[in-house]
Length: 401
Image (cartoon, rainbow, N blue to C red; front, top):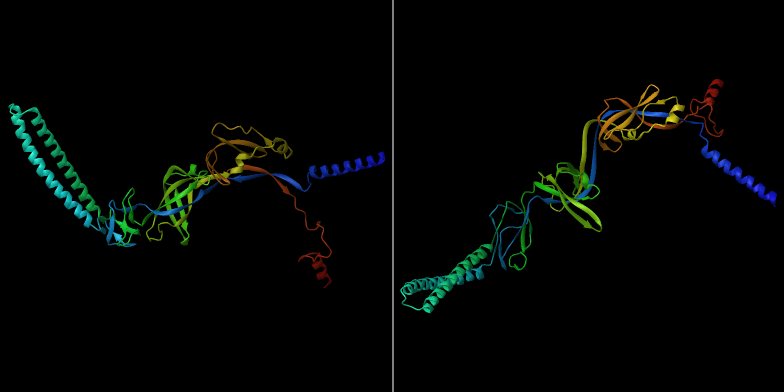
């Protein structure tokens, strides 16, 4: 029993030793080399994507502040209108009757006021001469003030009724195009707690905008003036251009997703962009032309002194950089020396260099492990596989001929 346990233990040790040897032994067919790259001039950009809705820059909803029946409509969808142009008229019979009634009340109030004003003047003279009692004088003052207030109220009512009569004539407040008509002739509209919308007018359809919903993770890089390109499903082959004109501060939360509205201008000379289209937006948050760059991973390189020493390469200095600076390494013969640089924008695998390096300077990127290739003559091959063109078999067949 003890011999069996010993045998099992020996087998286990042999298996563990074999596994460790397999994983820890450095393959003889591999070598390590120092990878370098030269600085170069590049053009790069960072882009964030979002979706939005195309809208007119100026869009006005035209309504009415009085209730009544739509008597006449003078415009329809897509009608081009000018500021002050007649759009519709409401039935004015009731409003005109109310105006006549208030005019009669105003005339009556004016007559009463003029009479009481004269009576007050007479009573005042008599009161000063002590010819009437205090009660009679006070009565004259009361009647005069009451007639005066009634007259003022009648004048105010006339102003209100006249304005309501004006509201029954619907005029365009701006130059533009009617993009929506919400009523028909004969329809009754009620202006209660809210003003009913009759028409929606867009000011200038050659000047549009896109309201894009940008994710909270990207909004920090969006600024006014940045270039934008976008497309719409209606014209999949066309690319429209614009610029960020406003970054709105209010967050929009929907299904626990936080977004911010970004307003993008969009020139629309061919009138292809229509209100309500969905836009697929690309905002260029970073654009750099002809700047000096190096691979970003060169900034992460830290020399392995022991390994480089085995390769016959010395390391001078260390990777400690001054505040606000970075360190890259350059190979000078068989020596690595640090170089202090200042970096700018980063885009993908490239980093902009603003100070410390010039064109075509070499910097160390990484230590790279490469496999050594084997020659065709020493490689094993199956006797059942056909020989490649120009191989030994071909040469033998040629010699036999």
